[in-house]
Length: 250
Image 1 (cartoon, rainbow, N blue to C red):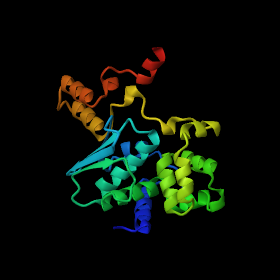
Image 2 (cartoon, rainbow, N blue to C red):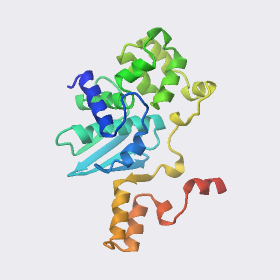
Image 3 (spheres, one colour):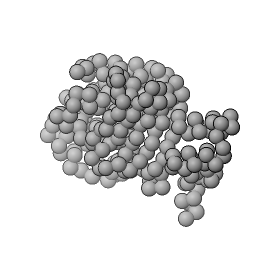
Image 4 (cartoon, rainbow, N blue to C red):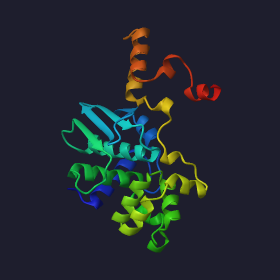
């Protein structure tokens, strides 16, 4: 199994591929959707509550499915987790990942969890944010997860692993309703809630680009283009409307 240092280095190398530094928060969905060097399609789909996501890889084509009923913070973590499988595991074809962060997971899953944590929040970035262990109270925990846009559970797991908080403190903080506590500190609740129902089925990335290019080259008919886009849950493209505007008019 790779060491924490190796996984942190791998995460930093990935950030450099994206021209991102090793300290700032990243918009991982925007980066991966726009990463045209890799043929990655992201599908948001309501999966079982036990499953965070899954990924498949065939030749250069990669599909990452994210459980859209998980919180936004968890979805970001899942995308980072799945990237480890598709980018750095040899002979990877298909992986289904569960929600747990327990120690009895397979080694590849534990490595992917650690990589995801370091990709969203590199080791030095967390220490620079706050190195003093005595200051890691609940408010600081929420401040940090809002800054790095990482889920509450993933944040607590990382802080325990880095020995910045105790197991006892982590267990105590797990019992709170974090969205309410975050709101009291002046934050929005978006990080802690799932994708809006009207976008829980949604596809972005390489598949959409391929369909558009095939249509531009007249390799598929307009009808086939619309069929493919509808299969990818992109009625907004087919019918040329903005789903958010539709909601506002409801």
